[in-house]
Image 1 (cartoon, rainbow, N blue to C red):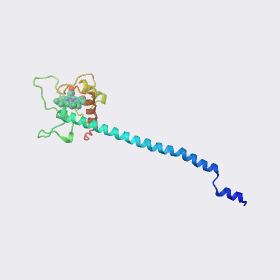
Image 2: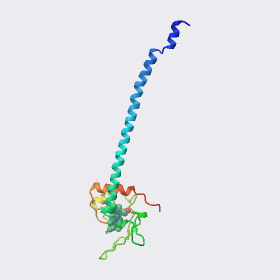
Image 3: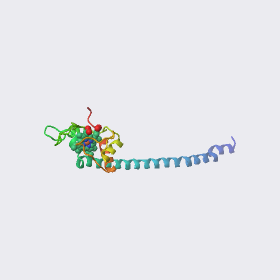
Length: 166
Ligand code: HEC
């Protein structure tokens, strides 16, 4: 073996080195970019999650403490207290009109989980009083005129509930 061929085996050739450097230059930005987008995505999900929690909490406050939907839409036990285990799952109506009314409903339907309308139907109902068939619901269902934000939070809260299996 000649002296010059030994030399060329022991020392990495220049083109190889260049290739490694080039590859590194190519890969490092990809890795950095990936972890950046991942971090940004996580922050984004986190913010969205927080916004959704805030929306649901506001909806719960309106439903439970302001518009008291539960008073009609939740069944009661024999002591007359609301059944927490069947929250907003529909209930026989306990109110009667002071004056006889022909078409008085006997039931307040289930509104927990997936009420009988799309989000848009629900928002329209709560902001205008008009239900998905273009009609107003019968009393004693109140004719709400909520702001859009309030209606959206009520819907977010109702959707967040999981009704018990029936
Ligand atoms: C005073 C009683 C009462 C209160 C309070 C009340 N509801 Fe109702 N709700 C009813 C009755 C009764 C009906 C059935 C009306 C009908 O059949 O025409 C009804 C119907 C509905 C429906 C139609 C559901 C379907 O599948 O047909 C929705 C949605 C609804 N209520 C949502 C709400 C929400 C949300 C609240 C609170 C923000 C609320 N209601 C408060 C009595 C009430």
